[in-house]
Image (cartoon, rainbow, N blue to C red; front, side, top):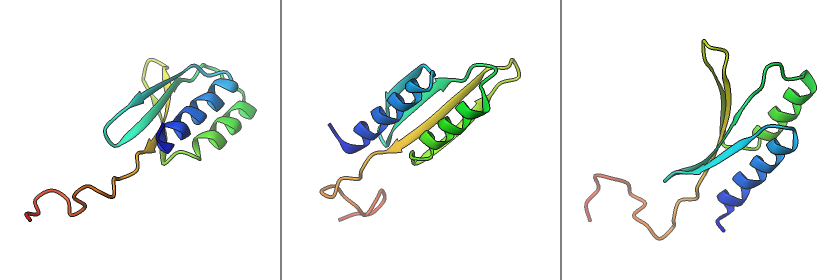
Length: 92
């Protein structure tokens, strides 16, 4: 299992441990973890959640006008050292 996948699963497990239900999805460049945040969430739990997502490469909170809140975090996948590292648009 790739390190990014292990890291994403560990983040999801830690969020589950503080009482959030998580979803993990694989994407081409990253693995995402999402969790619905219940209302209200105690301040101590928020501190724990922020400590967990700080280990991700990116994280945020989506809040809707209907009161729904979704926490998300992303763990980047490693770039293959054997691929074309020059990027798109460069010809050989």
